[in-house]
Image (cartoon, rainbow, N blue to C red; front, side):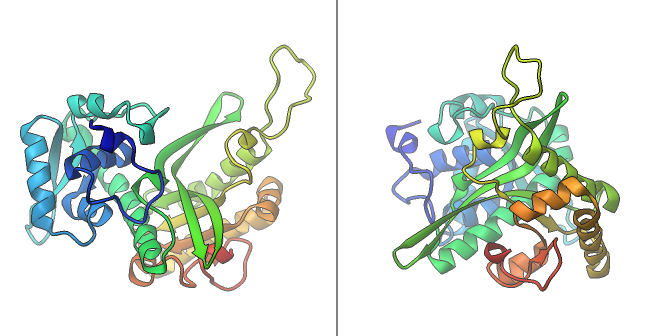
Length: 304
């Protein structure tokens, strides 16, 4: 990687065109795991052409840094989902934007096909926020969305969020920094299991660090304070079912907030909301498309 690729600021409306697109593409695939040609174009060169993105990807494939799997499509179009090879992962492991995050190279098209549907849905959610940020003059770029963030919740168990989002709202001279855990649900699990994910976030909120060698249950404060000044929002993005079914899933999550004491305690301190992915893509996350899990009328995610 060149020094230009290593000095990219973490937060931008869009990556600088002055930085080599090939370097940005490798970094984006290391960050987001899998993405289609169209998604990479929208992420890295929203004003560029698909042909430009395709040329870069094909050159990286010829060099052995990336590979792709072809998605099944009823229209018989050949949509390619791209991912890093072992060599591509090795090349990107020392990037500052990826520091502290182990590489997850995909070693075969079979492995890629298993991960692709969910991973692409997570990228779709990111792109909805990124497009909104560009339109509104806010800050949220490719490196402000970290997939698969893991935290201990005690008793040897871990919570793995689909993504952690950093987002800066810019209003005149005021800057409001927001963080959110994002869960993308494609309706592949039961509604009860989805609602139970809230218990894991409540456990993270309650989990305290126990000093080594101390037997009495006197911790040193919530463990999450090691990473966040305030507990991030928890946003559920739903897709893969009818409007009625998705609304039922939201209702089940609202019932969990109302009836589970730990989740209710979390809801008093951290905003919780759910929205439909297609609504985010059509209207934008800044519109009143988010259902607060504590009840009440839909609103923008920043107002939950």
